[in-house]
Length: 312
Image (cartoon, rainbow, N blue to C red; front, side, top):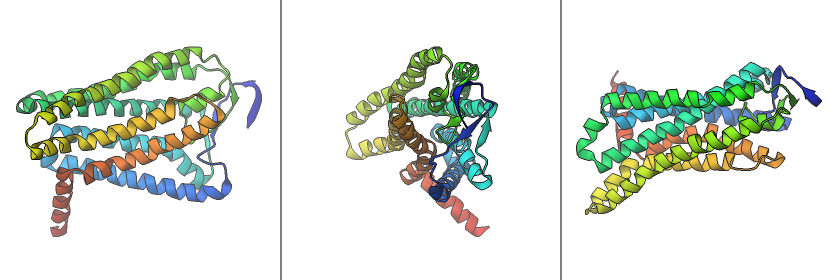
């Protein structure tokens, strides 16, 4: 329901990906197919990392964390449109909406931090190979993972605190398929200056620039080290070990830039929804493909497990 006057809302209505009734069935099946593929691919990666001792290395430890993040972020962002189609309920309480925003944003921040850890791991592996096992030991990897998870869930707390304090909204219809910051800010009639300032300072510096710099800087040293390798075979092997991570990082950052670094207008909200759908559905689906198709260790592990299953 639209509200012309300022009013406090107790629930929101999720509009979804499209308001056209004739497209709802097609959208449901496409989203369901993508979600099942994402779930299957990331669960497979996670199981291989856990069960195959050949993959008990720092690189695959962080890859397992990335798979958990992909499964969680896809589930938290896509479940509402799937449920809405099945039972026809696209309402979400104010508290549930804020909680969904908090969990999804924390997972998104965590993914950026995990990619930083993976970038550092590749730097040590290529630039300091003789000290790799000493520097990237199990305690260091566990500590890095804990720091990533705790930091990401703490970073979003100020956003949630300010957002939950907004007292009125121009409408309770969210032009999106889940509760994200941009569509919520476009609806509120409360003073958003503090939240926008926070987004500019913390969001740009801590959640955007810092992770991107920490992710891409090691590759300056990695590329420099690769170029110093004399044999073509050695250069190809060194580049091969980090090519999957580069592909995932570039894919994610290009999507995030297209999604968030744009002015908020009626047209931009629609394009934001498309980029958000790609980020929450397609990227988590593509990550297992990128790592499995370009990674000999993962493919070998999968073949071993399939061969073992055949004899059981």
